[in-house]
Length: 51
Image 1 (cartoon, rainbow, N blue to C red):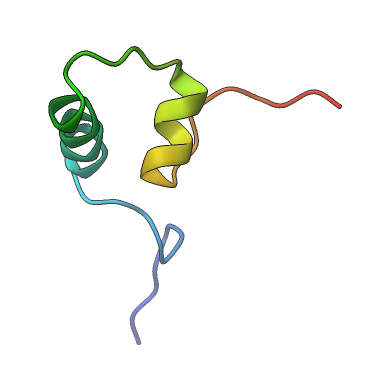
Image 2 (image 1 turned 45 degrees about the vertical axis):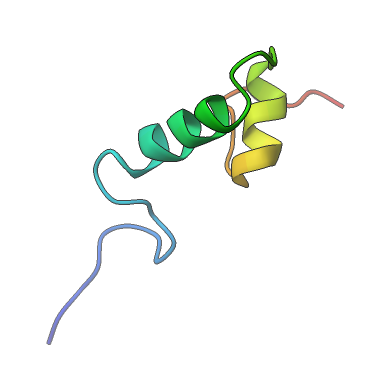
C-alpha cells in the first residue's frame, strides 16, 4: 500500500520558478505585482487574503 503525504496538485521542484520566469520573459517590459503573477500562473502568491 502506498501513501501520499501532499496534495495531488503539488508542483515539482523548481516548477513554479520556471512558470514565473516564463511570464517575465514573455513580457520583459511589463511590471507585475505578486498577485498578478499568481493570476497568470494559476498559483498562489503566498499572501493570505483577508475579507
